[in-house]
Image 1 (cartoon, one colour):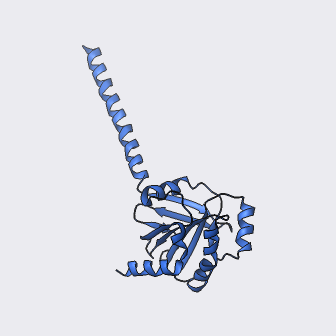
Image 2: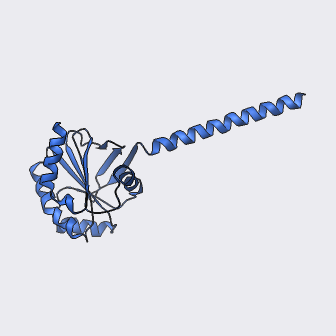
Image 3: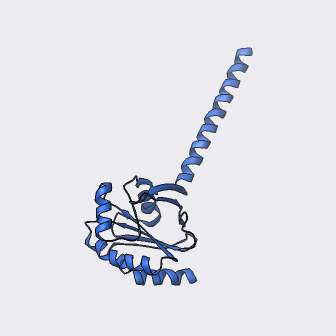
Length: 185
């Protein structure tokens, strides 16, 4: 009889342990898709911390500014066409706007640095890194299929105003106007 009680208690304790582990695992899995905090480095070794979920994409230390997050490649003609306009926007609206660009096709740090200098880019360009979580977020939340250029625009508090992909994203003046109008509603 004593052995039966011990066995029943062992089974109960085992079930509780399994349930506890399962609950922790499913809780962590369910929150993984909702919110992330990732740190990147720029070409100039500045830290860029990004928090994102389904509706927000906050760049730490950039609250109070509109943020344009660009995904591009050096060998993409549409992407290169955007660079002069991005430079102009960053210069004209430096106090209200922050542009952060991510090179979708990895090059070496030196290659990215040389291209940034060649085009005289005055906004932040993220250096090589692990972008899997970020790309996965864009695929799930914005149905992004890897088309570049791509633009994610956030208001001053990090609320996503628009996500544009492909050739439509290179008219930034219009895109910014649309975003500001959405922000005012």
